[in-house]
Length: 400
Ligand code: SF4
Ligand code: SF4
Image (cartoon, rainbow, N blue to C red):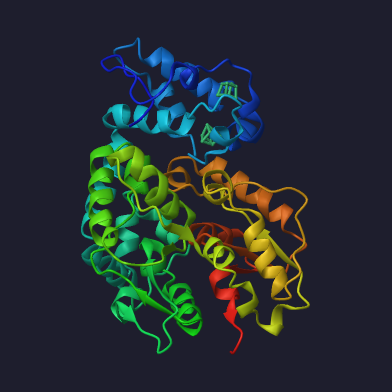
């Protein structure tokens, strides 16, 4: 249950202490929108104050809606607040109450609702439209412009079209792969490499055909009911599988399967995990290597926000990569890539500014490794002279 209290509801499943923000401002330190704008109302503390005020109002002003929807839902405030105030849960709830108040948000929500309800139809249609140039026409409506503008190319064959079960002769265990939309429709080669690696390590891999979008894009647009439906569908698809782990290649998906579903529908996929978490938990690092082509390169690791702040993963990928002979150099500073789903569409200037900062931070690197396919999309739009890779593409089984 959400901890947010609306004027019509009581506090649920929470304690007064958790709800109380003492306005210390600690959470501002890592908030990307506050760093960008220097505006208190774009900080977690400012947004909390605004949400408290909105509970007393009948109508939200466009400026108030803007402050709630400009949050990137990165989670750094939740992880830094000394009192454990769950800012992002409140933002999600406020969005679900405000989503219908703005024309552009309604249009985006409608597009996301139908595109993600019928993904197996919507993505091939968009791929066809991209090939024929028709997508460019639709882009003028502002809904799909991001696809062209970011150079996103839909894959000619999705990961799920390859097959749903990969068996190995020497079964060490069984893994389910949550492909997610970006891996399935845009970067299936990352999923293919992961399957190769897992099967070489002795794991059978299953990709349930009933998998649907994790629901994160819907919840971020305030569509709580639709996101809950996705959660129920994925719990049905993965919940009954006898597998050691459900590995996802996107930290936002992993966080949703593992944590947010519990808040949304009271059930979750407890064994959902990031690939590097799985490698560490099963002491598989010694069975992995990396291509010798990367041994003398200057390589940096980009931490996706949901990996750092929601899944609390930082040292695992670094230790695993170091074990394969990849020497990582830490950037001068680090931070969000600036994508955050609809944020890139609605707040393009701020998104670009964050990306420009990352370009400076990673200037000395030849290669950037990350664990999020959406960060890859964003980083590739600006860091064109760098090789940007997913960690699952870098870690190869020892015998290859
Ligand atoms: S949310 Fe937490 S860290 Fe931020 S101002 Fe309130 S009490 Fe302080
Ligand atoms: S989730 Fe991120 S962007 Fe939103 S208020 Fe918290 S720190 Fe700022």
